[in-house]
Length: 621
Image 1: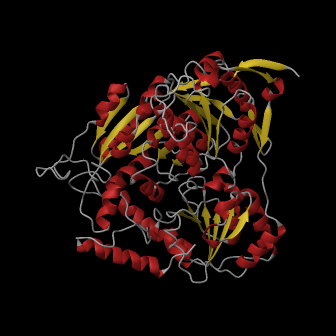
Image 2: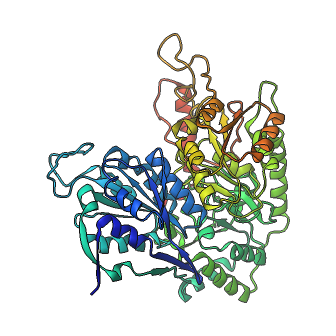
């Protein structure tokens, strides 16, 4: 048996460089490179290996470990999970910074390979700098924190352990049903230890994605359910995107005249103005989608986790005869809400179900309801598009202006605050894969990093980050990274003086303004209720070397957007918008834990109203 003497770190890179993925006969190199930050835990181990392999494996140096891992998440999401980056960080705080990104990846079912540095396996220099100690169990380190947010976790205690663990890591990363964050903890000493690895470990491996079709029993069962239903509704989830099944979903809906709503992950793969597209559904949904969802007698949920925003906290489907059918590659997702579950690939399942329903000449009984629902929603859009106030710029009007001004092939990225709900309702994408929302975790601080990730994935198009002032303050170091790497991104910063979507939620439940706006402390010293703070976000961007703009109205925004298109380096537009001028809800319900006992009667009344909604009609599962 031929062998090669390599360090554990060198062998890992050699292995990763030879992994490929095949989808429908198209082969793609799976691991595109490594991102991260060096410290004493990885610079002389994995860092040495990255230097040795720099001609084959590109390395991107971040400024914050969580943010660089979010770049990798965004890259993989934009590539529809067909390409990934690995991420490395030093021991202790550096590695722990990636835990949030691990959660982001796992919740969104996005492949992310994390390589956190770890304490010494031989425990001789113990405890080392930045090591967490647990006196009751010396085997525990900071990296055990990754266990709860990883789909696969291992600690490489000896060089030869790498072989089985690395193969299992790729197995999970390339499994569409189980993918998410994969964590391989690398002790500092083991990274540099050598071993005679067999040459076979480094051979080219092609991981073929198998499409699982519906079996005959499932097909018969769901056909029997649907055949007598008059008003079906399809939910287009992220699984439709990752299965490349958008054409099949459109064919299915058009054949039987079935309208469809979208989740955040499913939005944007089908043009917004398709005659059957109702837009987003649920808490962030449109009037059209939520009205028809209440009347639907069968819901066909394709590739969605059915989280509380999609289902309006299990309140969206009000027809007493409604049945729920799920099509999902993930068994656990398919079984949610007591659904009739189809564990299958979205593309395969839609083709099979379409054929079965055609055989029985099925069609829905919708007449003018779909058109009328969309027409009513268009009237609401018109109001939000042209919302005006004498005292400042409305957020919905700013979004409309941006939608009308930037190139339709540009990618937009967002994740947190009021912007995701606004964008799901009012953004009108016409090109596929241009709407990039991280809303499984809704992780503040993802936005700027996400824009860089999409730019690396699609370098020929503009990438726009939609971020609130709160989200920007959470994390924006990758604005500098984009300049360092000469990868232009555009940051659209909506400054509304605080966490205004949470401020709205707070007040809707009878609670006074408390800690949700960016204000100076008042004279009493008990609360942050003084004057609004003032932050010159454009100056922050200028300090990094970006081109920046300050706008307060529609005309200034158009000028800034058009000038930003001409720039060759990253830009930031500081958009001052009025608090509370985001979109409102449309016939939805969001269950939150309002205090049932309080000194303020407004809070107790809000709890009573909340409980009324819960008892009216919610799925018990």
